[in-house]
Length: 319
Image 1 (spheres, rainbow, N blue to C red):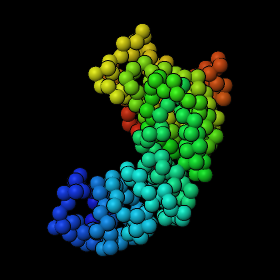
Image 2: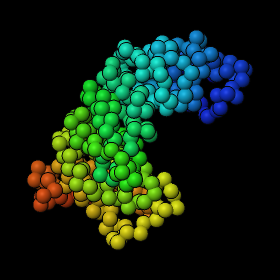
Image 3: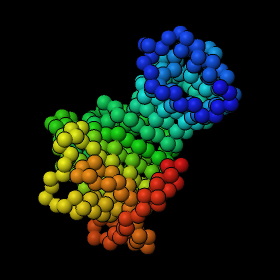
């Protein structure tokens, strides 16, 4: 097998990887080392790294690693996009630039924080983390402010996607750090922003968040054009909507609220996994009224658009 530009390997259990299977995988990587540009692996074993040097791989996705960040950089020296699910201690301890061209990273808050110190990140996706927990008022724990700000403050971020765990139960703790105002001050150049909210277990808490007055803080992001909102419940059988308003009225209220709170917003993607709500896309139609549409009486006009137009807008602003 030669000449591959893209290679995606299915899942396996690292503990069950035999020497023969490891040898086959090593041979495939070696035979395609000078043509591979994108590699997706569930696991990269340190035993195959001495044989790997892939100078043209620009995109690497890996679930688990048993090697150091320095060795990973030696094997894949020209990464522009990296997705890693595990927290690798050598990433956190690194005090140098591993990939000069790295701009796109998906991983835990700790991985993002470590790489942001020495890389000019533009696109960041922060996956589920024990620190990304919020109350229904968009407030995080006391130390959240420091950890989160350190992760993105030195980056000229244009796109940011966050997984967030939400519950009113956390109101009982020391939750006093406002996420949205901190985000607006730490990443003022954002064009694309995505929130994936995991609620437990009351779906009403997530809906309350989506029409919170605290969203007004995002109005300070003058370049923000596209927002994606996704919400699902951690308890699937409780996801049926039982609110006082119809699902359509609830959805329309959310859409109007976000366009009113963020004057620069052009597109909104909404995916709420309750009551069989479909994914919908919305576009502002009142360009000439944008500066007056401030949530305090200004007129906000928007229209539902097709999936094709919505996805095209997402691709444009994600890039």
